[in-house]
Amino acid sequence: MEATREAVAAEGDDPLTHRIIGAAIEVHRSIGPGLLESTYEACLCEELRVLGLSFRRQVEVPVVYRGVDVGVGYRLDLVVESSVLLELKAVEQLEQIHHAQILTYMRLSKIRTGLLINFNTAVLKNGIKRFVL
Image (tube, rainbow, N blue to C red):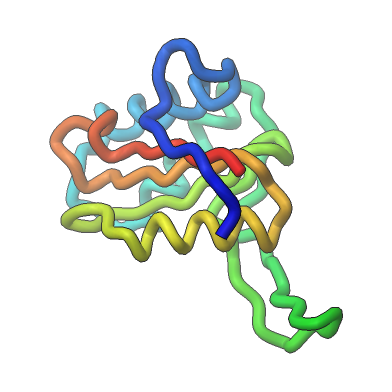
């Protein structure tokens, strides 16, 4: 796997991820932890819309092996402004498999920035990881 940098997005990071994180925090403050990923996705889309950010939901990404589309595809939860991939979770805790998943999705989609957001936390900032390829 390519060398990657992983860090919790902070105040000094790029403005777009900062806005996305702010939207996710607003959703978490409003509805709290313990719901389904699909609920957080729908609410986050509404927050992104209010912010005037463009996004696509459930973006299909094919798997191409040795130049051949093998007929297996994956769906990216959200892609914001065509440049940030969001993988949303509502799990007890983020595991290494979740990190591997978003990195693979980023490689397949050729999107260089990703946010892995776990809404099932007491404080949302503890459930956010930022990835850059």
